[in-house]
Length: 127
Image 1 (spheres, helix red, strand yellow):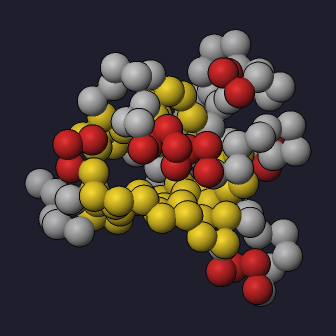
Image 2 (image 1 turned 180 degrees about the vertical axis):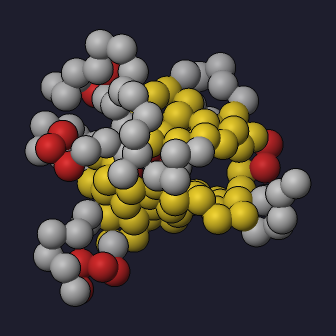
């Protein structure tokens, strides 16, 4: 579970103040707050592709987040589990997604886009 604090004045009812993501049309990097309590800046210049699929864990666990979004960069692969992830996919398409991080499950029903888990794996060793 991510222990990073939510942005100030976060509101579960407003997509503008969603604690799971932020958007800004002037950003050059995506700030990924991984569930391992580390934060990574990944440059959009290294963005390769994104893929949204149903979460395969649903077959074994009916309470699992329903969607999986994989964001691939030249050196890293970011995996998000949650619901309403198509909005994030569209923000990535415009290079507007500023940050992404998980939020507690208690927010899931109030948010149109909820990120339950964020993991990152590197395709190349990072020094």
